Length: 328
Image 1: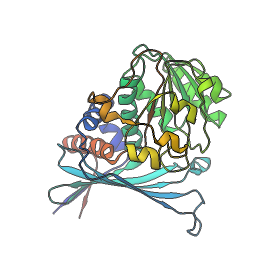
Image 2: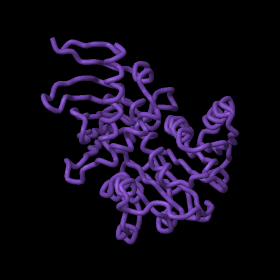
Image 3: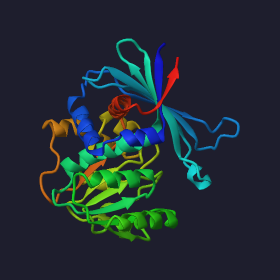
Image 4: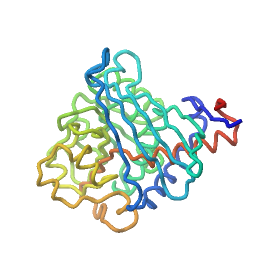
C-alpha cells in the first residue's frame, strides 16, 4: 500500500538544520535554469466569499522544481493578515511533495514553518553576498514570525551584536526584545521606523505595508536592506529614492516588477536593469563593490525554495522515523 507522510509543525522543527538549509538554498539559486518552467504565484482574493475578511487571500505556488532533486512541490496558502489579532496565524497552508518521475504524492507538510525558514535562508544568502563583511547591527522592522526566524539565520552569517526593533504593535516589539536579550543580544525597542534604521548595517523589513516605510534620508551609506513584505501587487516597504540609489537585487526579475518590491513604482524604475541573486552568486552581475554602497534585496519568494526545504525535511524525517504515515 502506498504511504503518504504527514509532517506537522513539531515534526518539521525536529528535522530543520538551519546552516544546511542556507547552503541548500544557495546551491538552488546557483543552479536555477532560466529556461525551466516559469514559477507561478496564483493569487485569489477571498473578500467576496461569505464570512471571509476583505483582505483574505488564497495563493498557490507552483512548481517547486530545481535540478538535482527528483521531486516537485505545490504549495497552497491561506493569507489572513488580521488573524494574529485573534491569536491565529496569518498564514496557513500545506506543501505537497510529489515524486517527479511518477507523480506519486510523497508527503504533506504544514507550510508556515517551512515558508518562514526557506524565506529566512534565502535572506541569509542575500545578506551574505550583499551586506558588508563587518556588519554587526540590525534593524528589524516587523517583529512577527519572519522577524524572529530571519534573526536566527542572520546569526549564521554575521556576528550580530545589536538589534533595533520596531513593530506597529509595541507589545510585539517588547516581546521580541526580551527574547533577544535572553540570548545575550542588545536589543532596543524603537518608537519609529526612522529611529530603528538610522545607524544600523542591515535592515530587515517584514511587514504588510502598502506605503513606503524606508526613505533614503533615513539610512546611512553602506547599509543593506532586505524587503520581504511585497509579494503581491500594491505592497511596498522601501521608497523609490532608495531603489534608484541602490544596487537592487531580486529573486525573480518579472515578479519584482509585477508583484514585488518594484510593483508600485514609476515606469522609470522599470527601465532599470535589475539583477537576480542567481546572477550575483554566479558572477554575472555585480553585488556590493564597496563599504559605502547601498544594497537592496527584494524577495518575492520562489517555489523552488519550498522544494529544497521540503526535500531536506522529508529525507530527514524518513531516516529518523518522524511524522505520521497516511495510507492512500
